Image (tube, rainbow, N blue to C red; front, top):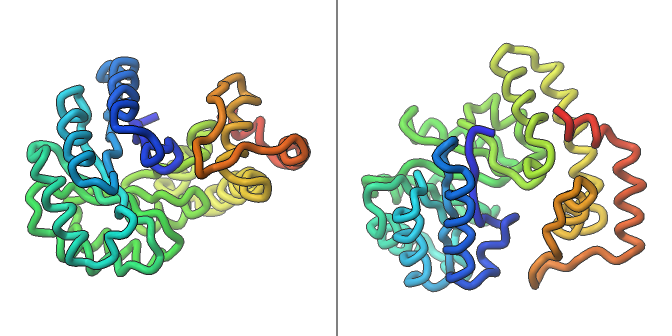
Length: 258
């Protein structure tokens, strides 16, 4: 792995109290021990919590902070105010917006945020590769732009993504590294073969309930992470059995081993 993005949507940071999120950041950074960069997601509905989390992330050694578009912040004006205050809380760390809202004009928002001196780029979670490329070009090579949709890793790499941050990377990161290497060498046929194989695994999780499916998948690999937090739901016994059957029809074990 080239780095970690901690406490994002998959990590359920937004469903955790600030104290637990701080503890999460401390444990991860202690375990990583400087071997790879760690970006901490600090987004919160309460701006004060987000600011406290950003300051804490800086203190414990994060190389950057990131934030979702907080729920109920539904205009560009309020989002600009939110990100401006958050960036100022840790002015020596890059801030990465986390764009996960198909109804938002992401390019327009980033244009409004370009005056923030420590804006480092973004994590874009969506399928619109035209919009994705506009964001890459807006940064003029100075931004870090992560793709956040596992199913689109190949196409985002072709559009200039710096890297991929996603949910199924928790158990099969090697396949996405292989996709990126194939794109870099121009072997797009191999990249597509790998992407389609990974997408079959992703689809198996989606069909039973993605977050519960992710927890069950990790448990299958000997990593018991408990159960999802509300409002996410754990799998029922029938869903668990269906997931196991579905994964047997994919290249799951092979992809995990990469």
